[in-house]
Length: 442
Image (tube, rainbow, N blue to C red):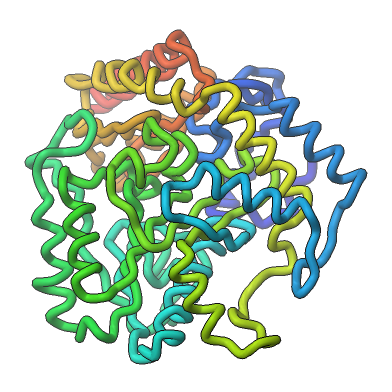
């Protein structure tokens, strides 16, 4: 296989191509690599294959749609399945979210939500609300808007010219007080007060359009909100007329042990972004959900016959993606996967925290069907030790996500107890092997 033609995303291309890891097929909980090995998927692809790989109902829906209507424009045109997909998504959305704007990814959902916030305030005559507040360690995709409000240093530093008028809250990771917490940590709700006491003291609140945060920061290493934190953020935004955007690209569709983090954590935003699990990763698709108030405000401000929101994509509400979304939502409902996630979450929590006390294990964080195991950095630099442990796990037949010095686990919701045990016993053995190697070198 010639690897030269492809420029891989978020990859060390030169290093990878010297020792490539190639996956050729997938079914259920497992990938198959080019050597014929079965690889247990411990991260649902990239947080997206919540219903498992190769689901025939989803695959058949995509195939049938491709034969019926493969593509149709959605600018001042329509196709029936786009409206059907929106209706299905609204049916399972948190209460109060009545309208759907389809995108093609979480990155596009992030930028779309920022534009909706600007359009909403402009429609209300508040054109001065042009600023956004993100959060350190936050991830909102890689388009210019999402990178600007995002708070992962490496992603921002690589591109010097991002959106102006953006500020950031501090992150909520506090290992000193919250190490090895099960579920939402007890300490740190006061970090939310920084929004009002610090950030909004530097910016006139009447110039701020929206605050955008992940209920749980996944890509930065499974960072959970302290108890009461999200509610404080909600209250401050409401007080100052600032829209609150929840980025549920990772946390939506069963990941936190319920349908949405909005519901499992009991805090409702004004705008909700999703993607990934929306189509089980089969066809790229994202969405932004809003209530009737935001939709009506933007639409009613425009004259009859005018385009009310000058934004969209060639592939918005793509027919194949719509078919995949409808089928995926049906699978979640008919197979009870959100209920299954809630039932399996205690087992995942127990297995994850069984690693406490092993060499180098600095912290373990979990909620629902996601866990992060953070390691102490080695003298070789950030991520080297966790990267070595990840590589040993892959060689032993288990795939997991590496983010900094943290291994992130977010398996498909169809996982069973034996497979959970396999994931964490494999990590344990890898940690012991790395510790022995380090001892020999010393």
